[in-house]
Image 1 (cartoon, one colour):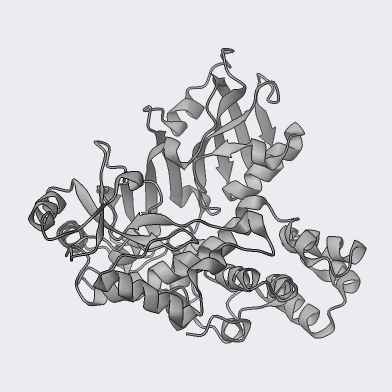
Image 2 (cartoon, one colour):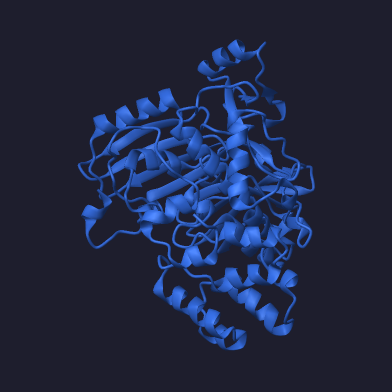
Length: 462
């Protein structure tokens, strides 16, 4: 499918997963259907750090801030109905510090209740914490010398309720058994790209090509038939007129990033690089990284179709797993004739996992069939590796990384169930998406079911 705003404007539910590179399933059950995230309380997630700290426990058992050594303060953040990037921006503004001074391990879903750790500059946070409306609540724990990054995270825990389902516990258990045996394809999830309006990779590619004016216009005015009517009509009107001052009067207040860009361009017409820089740095990078994620998903879909998720081949990369199951990407090994049998044995023992580059300007694509599939995905998108070094917006560049092609060392339990509801508890390593495992269990024909959209006819979810 063509990665363009024209394709986006013709998007329907049946095309969403194809648009973000996801095809096929690893399991054979029909699926329970249903919907997740109908209410924030239906999707709870929290972090466990490599040192064992539990974000939910730290928040719920918080008593007081402990002063100590270090230039930073470790805090527990509870947020409801807001993504981590926006929460970080709100917190930084409230504290009077730059957004980049807020450290966090990863981005948590907007449509959830989540607990995660952040670091702030020492002295910026009140000993009593920070509460903003009912969406952000921060509890300062102790001073530290280490800023949080993705390397600080051991795993994420989820409690997820599937509603309006057709629950067959035996089928769910059979699905889990198949996934344990066959592997779960480690796709980048729907929320990485957007479901109702998967725009991030479109904008990212335009940025990589140096077409900043088109990138800005796409971000503001490219519309999807699946997004809300108010948003869609506002974008369509802007696309026709490109009258920013007039559109600012009618653009929905919820589209905060778009409104900031429009205000900037009213004051500084033609400065499209500056307009994009009104977006948080993490979001700018995310757009370029989404192009890499799309290429990865496309390659992984083909690997899944060929039944080679767990099959190492000469030239493939494999990554060791730590005792906690975290992939140690810096210690990758290439599969050769002399280590092939050892690799196969360690893969069966779940001590290694096959990996593929999420491409960037420093990526080395393996000389194997899987590597060739990734090259073909990049070619299909019209992308060369050197384009990930973004000349027009250097801070959005990405060097690339390695990503397991299956989710390593995950766990799932059924906490409770009725005939139409299922409560699950999941444990996943950093960077893997709960919705990808839920997708295997639910197999919903409507991808909007993964963001809490309940159709008028519930049979559409089953």
